[in-house]
Structure formats: C-alpha cells, structure tokens
Length: 291
Image (cartoon, rainbow, N blue to C red; front, side):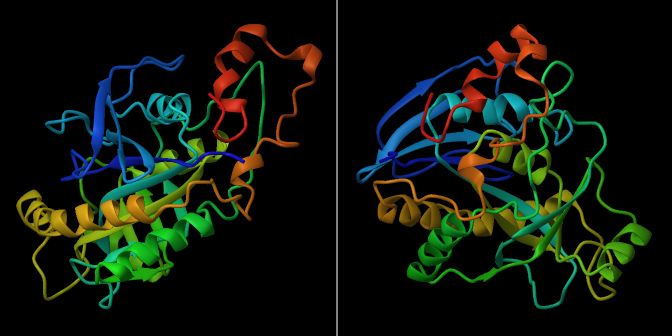
C-alpha cells in the first residue's frame, strides 16, 4: 500500500489553499535549486496535501523564469504521489467559454527556453508522454467538480507557449486551425517533469478568455484575464477542497504508467552512469510515495 499525498500547484490567482488544517510551512532546497516558494503542508480531513504557488506569492516569477525542475523535485521530496496543476488559459473554441474548467488530457509543447528534463549527459532517459495525464487522478478531479456543481469539460489539448507575451493574431488563428483547445504558458515542462518523477499528474485549465482569434471579443489583456481569474477563485477553492476531502487514503496505481515511468526508460549502462548525476536523481527515481 502506498499512502496518497496530494500536491497542488497553484497558478495565476491561486496563491493559497483554503481549508487546510495542521498547517506548517517549510522552505526546501533541491539538487536543482529552490522552488518558487515555501511548501505549505496540511490536511483536509484525512488527506495529506502539499501546496506550492507556481509563480510565488505576489506573482514574482514569469512563466519562463519558473524553476520547474525544483518545483517538481520539491513535491517528490515531500512524498507527493498525485499532483494537480491549476492554471489560467485561453480558449480556441466557442464552447470553451471564460469561466469553464477544462480537464485537458493532451499537451503540445511550444516552449523553447526551459529546462525540460531531470536527465541528460551522464544518465540518459526517455519516458513516454503519449498519455501525459493520469486518468484515475483526472477522474477524481471530475467527480469533485460534479459534486460542487462546477462547470467543466473532460478532455482537450493544451498548447503551451513560451510567453510571457500573449499570442499574435496569426499564432492564435494557426493554433485554432490546428484543432488545439486551450493555450497557456505553464503546463510544460511541468507535465514532462512530473512523469519523469513518477507522479500521477492532472491539469485543471481555467478558461479566462478567447485568446485573440475571436472577432467579437477584445484582445487579451492582463486586466480582463485577472477579472475572470478572480471570479474563478471561489470555484477553484471549492474544487480543491472537495477533491482533498474525498480523496482515497491509498494512491491509485496509474494505468498509463506514471508510477513506473522510468522502468526501461534509462538507456545509459549502469557502469557508465555519472555518480554525481545519480546522486541528484535518487529522489526522482524512487517509486511513487518514496522520498
């Protein structure tokens, strides 16, 4: 039995996690540097939770300036088995309207200036990202949304742009024509690193706008995005509180391989692995729930 510990990474507008009891705050360090902020530990009912604001309190880190490796490593060091990411996004479809929560299940990575792997020279690994979202965890989030009467849709493709600027009109039209559903700036390389760390991962993408493709809506600006983010804050808090309250005590094995993502993924022969790199990777390579 592996005890379930739920990690929450809060995006724009989600800087704290209401409803936690037995709270303690801890600043941690990882072999990849410092995470965005101190980790907040606590529980909702019997479920242990760890919260981290992705941009730091006060929103001090831009999407390109976040130390994603440190954030994910800190969660793994804290014993997190199931990681839920909450972020704002733009929509490419009329039916994905501002205020809707989209539980995406696919990603397209358009970032170019971020460290996207714990592995590299000295220890080479290639994990599968065919199915990047853990379906059992996603189903738990969907049940929580249903229970709280929160408007949501399950499924969809999230294209992650580098930012920090919003899309040009040409980019927005191209992404819409490609059939993508929503656009954001933070799900990558977060999802890739969570898979390498062998944690179940799920994204809750909160639609704030129609990007700039929509002829009947104003171009995207921070003021309009934040207005919708703030309107969604209560729903996000209710969703997360319900998810944690109803979460099973035991981590549910992931049918798409999150728990064993590194099995047969490391190509470097044991005798050729860099000892210093392997020391850094000890926690990352540990099975789910092991610190």
